Amino acid sequence: MTDSSRIYTAALIVIGDEILSGRTDDKNIAQVANWLGVQGIRLTEVRVVADDAAAIGAAVNALRTAHDYLFTTGGIGPTHDDITVDAIAAALGVGVVVHPEARAILEAHYETRGGLTEARLRMARVPAGATLIPNRYTGAPGIRHGNIFIMAGVPAITAGMLDALSGTLPGGSRMLSETIGCWVQESEVADLLGRTEKAHPGTQIGSYPFWRDGRTGANFVIRSVDAESLAACSRALVAGLEAMARSPIAGGI
Amino acid sequence: MTDSSRIYTAALIVIGDEILSGRTDDKNIAQVANWLGVQGIRLTEVRVVADDAAAIGAAVNALRTAHDYLFTTGGIGPTHDDITVDAIAAALGVGVVVHPEARAILEAHYETRGGLTEARLRMARVPAGATLIPNRYTGAPGIRHGNIFIMAGVPAITAGMLDALSGTLPGGSRMLSETIGCWVQESEVADLLGRTEKAHPGTQIGSYPFWRDGRTGANFVIRSVDAESLAACSRALVAGLEAMARSPIAGGI
Image (tube, rainbow over all chains, first blue to last red; front, side, top):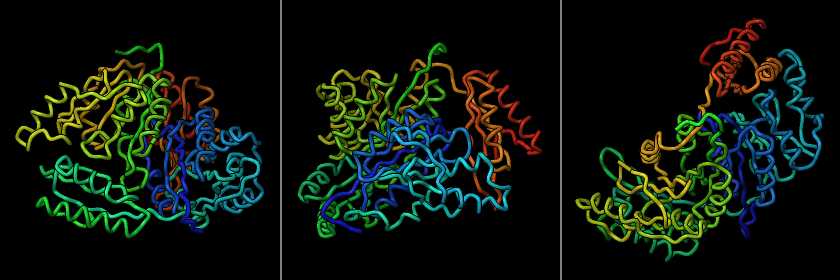
């Protein structure tokens, strides 16, 4: 499924008042980002929006045409505050239908758990034209509509849905990275970083400072889709740090 | 600084390849969200964008006019990948200048730390017309330009900048909340939740399920700016859960 001739990009919409109120720490941005990286797809934008149909719809329509893939997390449960399906259907200009396979999955799941009530049947509703993403934890499936992947917000369930999608989406070359740590103030090596990146086209160097135990350090993350460029850039940075009598630490600090 | 007659909103732009690559778990969304809540300001949208001037500029211009306040985190250090100031200045159509007070702060901070090099002086650059946000940890200040607050990305430093801004921004009524936990499948109480919210205008009930030790539970978060509405809605939900022979747990599970 790898097409190294082009870059595949994705956006993520995290839907949920609980993130915007600060009640819940989001775990899905990092999880989706890491999973996409393995698929050879670059996460290039994330939006966190409220449980608000207009806000969800505006974000969906802004992002679905700008990227190869659009993922959403949150708002697909059985309660009144779960409005993602309706909001996305409205944004796409399609109706909402009960998906027969989703209904069958839920009927089986709830057979010994009190039956398929009206609230539970809400979780079989999809934008017309959608297919399903399996959910091995709690029955209620995720939803795919065109290039939009509508997933649960509970991170463990999101993880299961991502797992079900693994290897199924065309992607490009994976972004490779190496991390070099150093007990140095990043301002001391700013020139070296800029020069080294410039001397190695197709690479990027990110600089991430930290303060620990009264000491200052930084991790430098070198990224490239090309293994040779990555290695050359890393070697040059290590040599540059050593020339300044700084000890680079492979793998980071 | 409280004006309860209207709702104040804010947006946040998290700037950083390290978040989008999944390397770093964002901590600033929850931190900024909680801080804004205390100020009586509602965080209504977050965007995470790459270290890319066009992406930063587009997000800034989309959000700064749509909200009372716009906050950014990340990209204001001394290295080549710190492009936030330039990107925001370009988006605003203003130049970049060295802020004399920022320069003086950095000169003092680095006096015993190797002096104010060219790289360090980068951290005194601001969009023309800006004022400073103090940074008690590492000297390099944050930046305020109109309703835009440009802050560091390292969470501890962001925290210090937020602390410096505490109580200085006009806000509205604080959103109050109560959490009620229950060992129940949310699908069993979906009707109760929807009815209870509807019966108490000005309240919202969020339902957050979890699975723990083989059991299913949910926390219900009731929110309102009005303490009496909040209390009445909470009482009604507790009574409803008790009427279903479910034991509500005040404060959540």
